[in-house]
Length: 408
RNA sequence: GGAGGGGUACCAAAGUGGCCAAAUGGGGCGGACUGUAAAUCCGUUGCGUAAUGCUUCGCAGGUUCGAAUCCUGCCCCCUCCA
Image 1 (cartoon, chains in turn red, brown):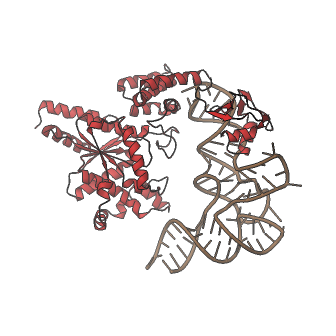
Image 2 (spheres, rainbow, N blue to C red):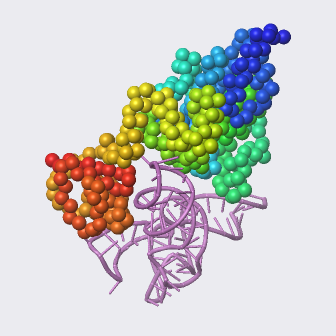
Image 3 (cartoon, rainbow, N blue to C red):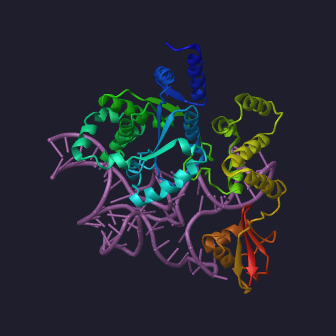
């Protein structure tokens, strides 16, 4: 039996863990594990796997990382599994069909920058970073067969993306089946009590339970967090789709990207990323819905919060300043890239290509015809123009691409 | 091993002898509107100082006045049967 204080502690922890999660499977087991943990004073072993497929952490990752941080703050033991081995296989995805396999060097390189960025969120003192290559690489073929023998193809095909590909006659490579098994084996190796992941990880997380049971271990609880959509407002945030906001971005970039998040996602971003009290967020939502508050202002507050958290107060101040002068007042950006050029007159089309403002002569010509090209703010209309640069001239394509010329 | 289906532009996907530089959608790039947003609308999206020009439809040949489209060989992918 637990004392009243202990019961209260379990309730407190459960409430914190629950906030913002999409699903906890099975929740009763989590309660049991928490009670046991509180009763015996033994921290839970909490695992999160990360594939070093790209070199940057983005806001999508931070959702689940924050949950991990909360476990840390509750005194539990946290394992961050870098998929040094699994990363070389690549988690099967519906989109990429067969994801490219990373080399060991790429994995090592990515992992390095990863860990530094991870500590923007996690407490380094309380984080155990482990590499699954350490225990997966030494497995021999017989052991691999043993893992594979615990699961049937039919069960594997229950996984949504496998099923879909199978039905659509698209290729599924045998090694892709091993990905869930390897991830599950990580849980066995670490004797995980809890594994975190996005909702898209459900199959893999449950595979961990399956394999733990096969190995005679208590089964882990799967704690799943909602996926964060990226800047396109549709797909989940990912580097490969280019719709992400990295935690290491230039302040102005991070701020600008946050300001371009679709309004429809504004409060989802608040719920998943903001540390502000829930009541405050709710009040803001009501104000926006009632038209008392411009969604832009709500978005700006969020952008400020996140830039400050990841990049610091100074970065926040600068980014806000930059955004105000450049975009709210419509001025030129203060960080226009400069190019050194000679003062020889050349065909305007050639200039655009040379300056990287157009991909080809045809593209440059089109841009001029569309009225997208300006020199010092004056629209260029003649595709045959011979242009002679003056020091400090600003050549512009569209609203966002600028180059300042420095004549030598 | 056998049978069938398929490889088209950044992606998806039409096109099966000339009207095809190739429909349509997505994405990209511009323009309008705005809050550098979303939604919406419009234009554009192989190269080429542009020409009844050049290169492109898996690769290499061939038939034809003319090929993404027909023929031959090769490569790759998928499904089913064994």
